[in-house]
Image 1 (cartoon, helix red, strand yellow):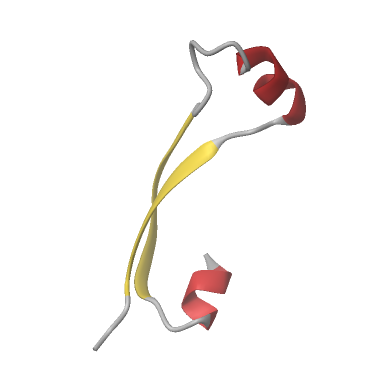
Image 2 (cartoon, rainbow, N blue to C red):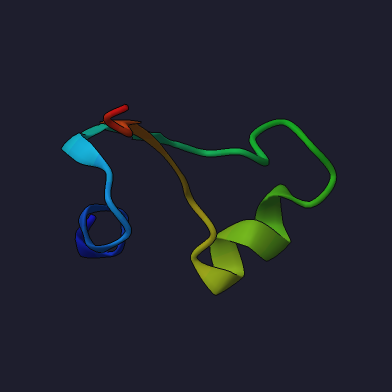
Length: 46
């Protein structure tokens, strides 16, 4: 979040997290290494 703010994005918000490998053959590997996906909202002013 700080990185996005630091490069000029405004209104940075965490919107949620998800399992990007759910129901795939790599689900167990992703879980082992703690892989997650996140949704972030940010806008870059004109």
